[in-house]
Length: 385
View (spheres, rainbow, N blue to C red):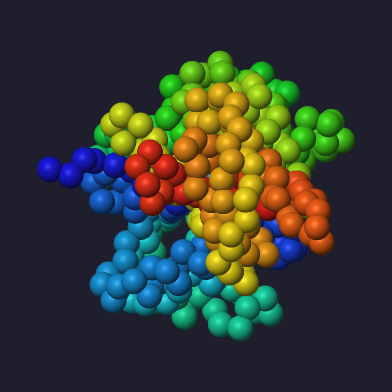
């Protein structure tokens, strides 16, 4: 019998506004949207940022069968709802979606339904809500509510964010995922809520829009830092911390630094990236990072020395040969297995005119796969400098 798993896919990981800057392509520029396939085959969608469009296109292309999903919306700021009008499955009458969110004091009764209507009202959108022919149901939830979706239990809590925000705890038969984007530290009541929500979670997804230094200059904006996420993760006994809701002005290199700082305090930390998939089983959590973009890829044969840390955190140094090289990265084969999203130093021997000049590069591990020889691993890296 196949083992039961829960599969969590990241379709949008940015906060505030989408970005297409070249400096942000590795982690991705779409705003908040996650998809969870539960062990009983159900589909939960967490937030409806611009990443929802990519997910919708994938679902529409994969099957002509009925598409159903439960959609948990944390709050009504643009970066969490702006993908709704562009979600292709909403325009097919055979599909069905059940939305959950809270009744806003600023919007009133049927808040989420009215958000739909407002986004597609004239003159903001070319077609109105009648163009959406899928079946849509709406349920109001509030902080502290508990309800079942299939064989999974969902618990909510209020987070410290302007105009309100909900965090979601999803307990599946194989483990627990907590989604707590858009929360600001400093309020003891909200922090107690968050810690209870995160208690013992296998995957804890937390807002990390700012560095600790930036947070001091953005009080009242409703966001957090990696340091606060680590503090909650340590206190709540979390297994894996995922840093989420990256600032649109944070380059990939800046997020690499945030991840490095967080891992010094909490080893099992990950930086959310578009296309990242976390598979939660009864015994372990598997993480897959998006592959290196092909770019201008060429076969190569460069001798190189690689230094880094193994998955167990032990330093290693190893000589190897780069056989596959692009403008963005490389595929190398090693006897040691480095940790995903860790940094490697790659020193390439570059033969010149009668002399050798070495080229030192920093690489970021995005893929681990079996190597061509026993006990070898193929390591896909992106060059960061």
